Image (cartoon, rainbow, N blue to C red; front, side, top):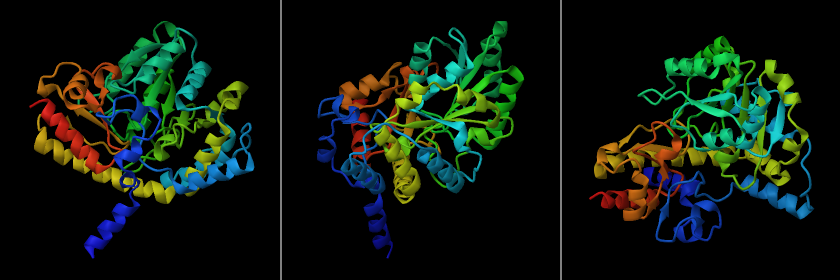
Amino acid sequence: MSGVLSSAREALNPLRQLTIDQLRQRTSLKWREYPDDVLPLWVAEMDVPLAEPVARAITAAVARGDTGYTAGTAYPQALAEFARRRWDWDGLAVERTALVPDVMHGVVEALRLVTEPGDAVVVNCPVYPPFYEFVAHAGRRIVEAPLGGDLRIDLGALEDAFRQARAGGRPAAYLLCSPHNPTGVLHTADELAAVADVAERHGVRVVADEIHAPVVLGGARFVPYLSVPGADNGLSLMSASKGWNLAGLRGALLIAGPAAAGDIARVPFEASASTSHLGVIAHTAALRDGGEWLDALLVGLDDNRRLLSALLAEHLPAIRYHPGQATYLAWLDCRALGLGDDPATVFLDRGRVALNSGLAFGTGGAGHVRLNLATAPELIIEAVRRMATAVA
């Protein structure tokens, strides 16, 4: 009976449904950046087929010729319903949302609402590299608040960064990554409430990137920043992109707490008008009807997380890996291998495995790599084998 159940579980797992030959036919960035002899476990794309409810919704829209400009509130309504089901949160008000093309463009719009050019934006490094790139492009400057040794938010470092950011009385923002990329850390309600308290005392506006919110493993639960005490003037960015692999079907939502409703009213029309109509259709379908597919994915990701831990312990025990409770990303500390600041280059050149270099994640990233777990177990096994051979 256990064998039957295991087979059924594998059949449902989206990560087990495509062969490497099928994946190499894809034309997206993950499978086109490197030659065919390289295993790509880097950029945040998943090696999964499209969830059937999403495929049906897009196919039906194309059949209707429904490819114009987006309209209506179906997307925020679907997200509000998803938040109630998954996170027991009923504070997502449709009228306090705005469509944006994707999360990072939404982050820029949010920063423009609460800061001016030259103002500071605090980030918890090591953190998602586009935080640095998009903040700089928006004319703001980064102030780093490094994570603690346990890879969690260090409130002392955060408070120091807030003081630095607010020097001279200028406005400042805190770009919170929740769940955290690249560590996979899931912030607790107490941690987020403490963040809200520190931000309020220092007059710093919080903008939360919560794109990985649906990807929470092992029975844990995501806590929306706007649901904690003191976060009423916060702003959040959410999307179905990471949970259902929809980066090519762009769409996200900028969400405001009750005290930030006026900020949402100032989001420029062109920001919302640039959102993809097919993207909104896809994201809405994922949130409304893609729960069963997501559950199967999360089981598969949990299996892969345990698999990676076991493989590293056996073949690369010098690598330190603290499995996170969220995202499909693994943050690997390779410093004990003696490969220098950029071990990703060694693994690529000698092992033909593409990982993200930790250097791009800011202070604390040297000597680290980020590995994408959202692939078939067989590819993770082969990747670790190649990585071990590269340092033998």
